Image 1 (cartoon, rainbow, N blue to C red):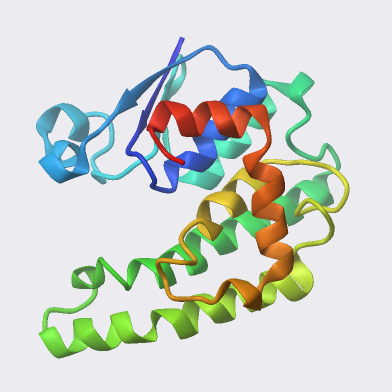
Image 2: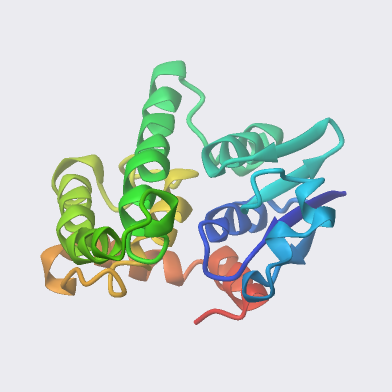
Amino acid sequence: MMKFFYAPGTCAVASHIALEEAGADYEGVRLDFSAGEQNKPEYLAVNPKGRVPALVTDKGILTETPAILAYIAQTHPTAKLAPTDPFTFAQAQEFNAYLCATVHVAHAHRMRGSRWADEDSSLVDMKRKVPETVGACFDLIENGMLQGDWVMGDTYTICDPYLFTAARWLDGDGVPAERHPRVRAHMERMAERPAAKAAMAQQGLN
């Protein structure tokens, strides 16, 4: 059985939903960030980065959402969570890499600016710019990267729980709902999926 480490409401929501979609055999382990559990020696032995998600498999430990999503899809092929065509799979990875490396980083400037700067004025400036930078990221998603009802078009893939997870941060980031109607509609579709409901319930999220 795999062991999945998460903290509620973080980017780990995406992998949690994918595990449920795949019907994977796993144990969920909740970390309390407010108590600093991510920085305790027990967890740092699992993931020295001190972040979530982390997935303990029989072959080793995986971290980083795009890697975990791809692993879940490829080890549970009957769930059909990833394209089998190499180029289309690369496109899915391209989308997930954008969420990981650009969207998530822009979002993190709102509450974790201390990763990049020390001066209070710098932290304030980063936080002030978040609606602009995150909004611009989702403009690209809204107007081209989101190919249909699902990210890759008509077929649900590992891109969809990841977009759902990132889009849940939009309100807190100060991006108006009416700016991205297609993304918001995607969120509503995702919220109705049984796997999303199950993962959200386990994390205590609405």
